[in-house]
Length: 313
Image (cartoon, rainbow, N blue to C red; front, top):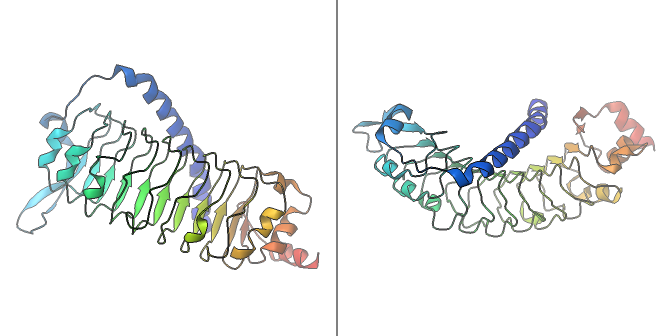
């Protein structure tokens, strides 16, 4: 992860979390006053764009459709638009996604800010080419029934998910990026995704790091604003870990740094700010004694002088 990406990630955290909270509050206030609104040709046609060849190469069709903020409760009409590859249904009032089952060419699907409560009986897992899926700010409480053999990026930020059992390799065998910020998770247990590289779990209530030893390809682990007191659970099996953010937790003891010894050879960026441990007088030197290859600490580059001082102590 570059310096620019590191800083950009930190800057985006607060903005995304504020927007998600505002959306949840607004949607909750209006959910009892929703009027039926079915998709019509008049609503659909202006949202079509990106003319491309169809799968058989013999004709052309619009493959992109933008239907965000249309107050939709029913999208049955969409069934016949079988050539769609990119679909944005954000900020509507949808709970039933069954009409999407016909859209087998979909690559990209955004359903943020709707009323989806479960993956059960939804067609997401039947879309053979779907690579990018976002259901941020819905009403999900678990991930049972979730699947997608081609999915590479999954965003479930801002739901009410309390457990992540069901996220398994045979159902999501190609997943690389998983976003679960702003849910109600208490543990990381349940994620068995050997190809996963980026895992975002900020703004939950996580107290225990469990099951992470299965994530051998993970490079980014984001755990800001949880309830961690230790970093037990991070171990040498996580042999690709490069970036770790545990800002705003309850970490107070140097024992947490000893827990990172197993990833000392790969870890290059560590964010520990807003923990009691970060208030120690010799904080930087203490961290570098445990992690001598670190390049950035709390967004600041580690200097040669700081490394030399840590070696002398």
